[in-house]
Image (tube, rainbow, N blue to C red):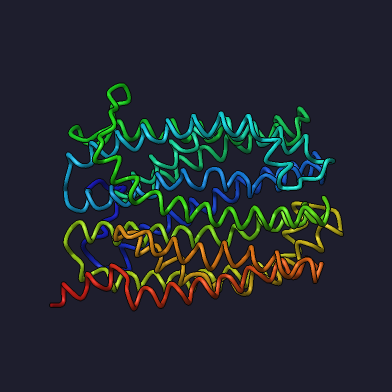
Length: 451
């Protein structure tokens, strides 16, 4: 095993998860940091209208990309299983098929996003005063979907080998590129939201190129050969079987956030700017939890592939504890420092007030969601994705739609909107815990192992 890789199928469980998770935590925190740089630079040099334009596109971008990122999740889970089993022929077919799928889906998504940007933003109720800026930002961002998918799919497969360091290095290089271009295009040349979008796409391109180079340097018998890529029918089906539910789950979160964003838009551009500012802060809490969810999926996948199922249950418990500590510490830090940090993104007192209100409703309760995140990630790592998708559909998407549709017209208060988050988190976590202990594939597998 290469020095940059961490063994998840042997040795102390906590140590393996820790060394694998820390680069993932840093990767997600750095990802959030350089996304926040966009907002900070735009808010400081281009004003609240440009900041609102960037923020108003976030939910829509996540909706469009969420489904196709399921390709990444499915490929990563399968890669971890093949890697744990030492199946190099399976790895060869998987790398080639997954990269081809990401390119094809990326091209389709780029064209659709560019052509339908304004229509989708109007459907969301984006105010006319920010619509041109929002449309321009979204069109440019969507043009870079191909490189976005190539990076995520490729980096995920590298991590599935237990190597979470290299993707972090590639992300840091891309982040530095993003910062430099933000300062040049937004602060110096005055290109506003469009300049921030160009900087983001360019940074993603740099990271994607580095990932592809790394995949071409894997062991000879399964490395990526860009000019000899082929899609294997059975492998594509396996990816699709796991990926589609994962993609639907990601889309459901995005759909609910899209509805939330359309309701936020109804409160005006100042509210939009405040929520956009807090969303960047909130990401510093949630991104590390996403990293631990990815870590447990890789851990479960590798150990099932290696036939070491006895390690699975202990590893899941360890990841739950790590997530709980992370959520409590970061949530507390945001509560203590939130007011100072909000001022980085917007100087408008009214926008700051909206951001602080959202913080008080979300930050103290984010720990509730870890049970859904970690146990759901573990189930996905075992190759079972349908049940957690149904849970997410009902508890996150359907519940939030009903909540906002029924209550917001009666109580036209943005605090009613913010309240739907912790309540939906609670429903999702309770349902996931019940499923995990009563019917999950992991539980059934462990029973077979124990006789």
